[in-house]
Amino acid sequence: MKRDPDLVRHLLLFLEEKSDDKGVDNLVVNGYSESEVMYHFILMDQAGLVRCERIVSRTTPDRVIRVLPFSLTWHGHEFLEASRDEGAWKKAKELVRSKSGALSFDVLKGVLIGLAKDSVGL
Picture 1: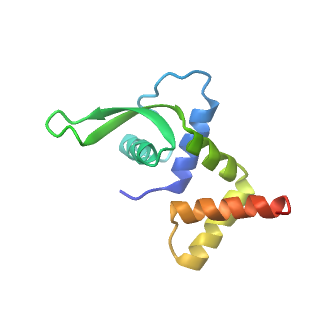
Picture 2: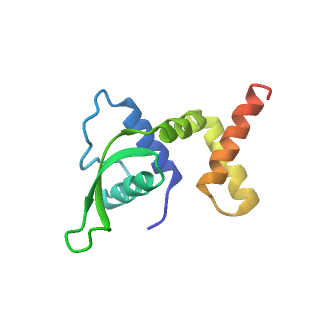
């Protein structure tokens, strides 16, 4: 399964808008399967973007098979703030893809931060 930065951003926005700190189970996102959403929550947990409860395999305890996301971490908030503006988000994705042919998350975040700095004259 491929990582989808647009889905990551969408899920971060969703978690930020929640009015409570309760876990989210079986979130439906138009255009994505339940397994794609869960896979991305697992990736976001691994990246330290979201605070989750990990559900592990009974036979292989070090294998996370599902997560129950609660909220954003500091890093999740930081990435979301950098990517909040839709125009900057699109520009950063296009720039990274055109220069590297791929969409590395760390490079994308760096470009978003660079765009933010440029917009305030730093």
